[in-house]
Image 1 (cartoon, rainbow, N blue to C red):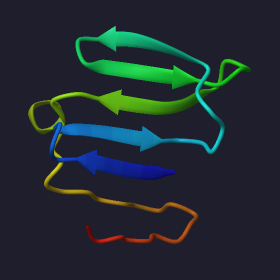
Image 2 (cartoon, rainbow, N blue to C red; image 1 turned 180 degrees about the vertical axis):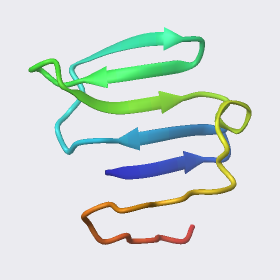
Image 3 (cartoon, rainbow, N blue to C red; image 1 turned 60 degrees about the vertical axis):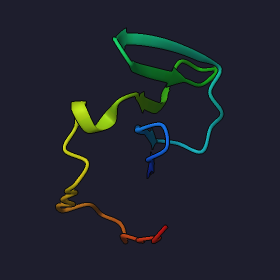
Image 4 (cartoon, helix red, strand yellow; image 1 turned 90 degrees about the vertical axis):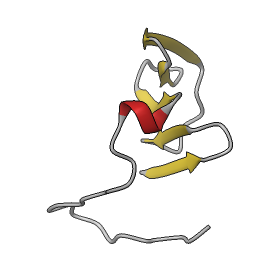
Length: 72
């Protein structure tokens, strides 16, 4: 899973899978869910993310994985 924030457009994309998106569905204004060919959720796109999410802070708790930080 990857979290990608794009400050130039104030959008946050959450990659949940490496599978490519085949279809998308807007579930509320500026929030789009992406699905693969099998109907599995693969990503979440949030426009105007700074007004819809607390992007200044990220807490990771009890994930069974390593956490990698890439500075921009």
